[in-house]
Image (tube, rainbow, N blue to C red; front, top):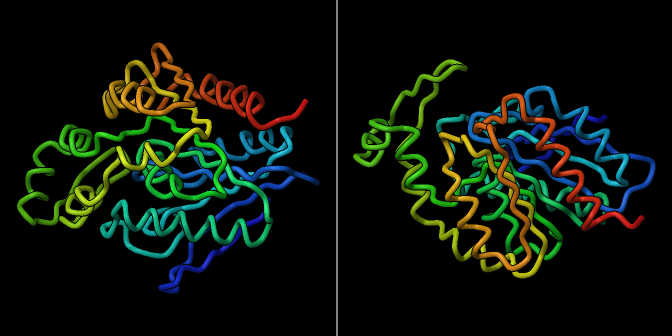
Length: 251
């Protein structure tokens, strides 16, 4: 494992981890969820070992404003995360000249679609618990805070990790993104959709919506799995590894 600092055009630094086997054919880039971190609750090292065994590298990074990257979380927007992802894609392809696969969890999955759909260097997509109905999802999750954001007010939200602030620009920016357009631009590239049946953050409807609009997608709805896949994390990893073997490993 190596630690990296990838520089954006605005001079903010993106913190990343990269795991490389002796030789590899693809590089998997992973995008964490809203309020997440690149370490994926300390699962990233074990997951990366299995990815390396498939003959793939893995690069995980913190979006700006999260984890060890520069920036302020309160400035979060989908557009900013797309810029981060494109910076990482450019770095990874310039450095390693390998085709890329993108994996995103939750809002990181939304970012994968928005930032990767038009990228010819991206050969596949893995979407864990990913919302495409963004307005409905954040209305439900944020409740009264969403209404305050719509009114142009910065809000303070308390969760299990503490508290954070969000600016109205977050909601304003969501309206600028057409997820249907991104789904169309995926074309016939393979997509894996993994969704928990008991997810009370991202409704199962989102997974079915994507599946019905993609021409080369596989969807797995995991029984008894919530948004975080508590007690089902290993199931999600095994589903992902099986799919990667099917589409990207020559045995």
